[in-house]
Length: 71
Image (cartoon, rainbow, N blue to C red; front, side):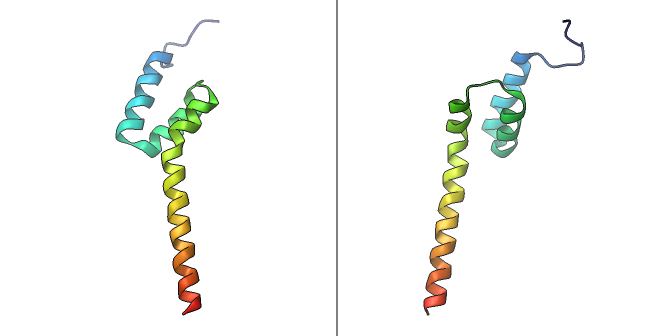
């Protein structure tokens, strides 16, 4: 099957995703899951920082809410 001329090559997509992961992390994550055929463990590993930040914010929010209710 011939590749359409308006499609980006896999190497170009990889370059775009890596640069997006470096300079625009949330957009890079979306592009990574949408475009890349990387192994799932690589995708999860690259997603861990945002997951950990969100989990930490959630724990802090819950802690503050519990302290406010207890006061």
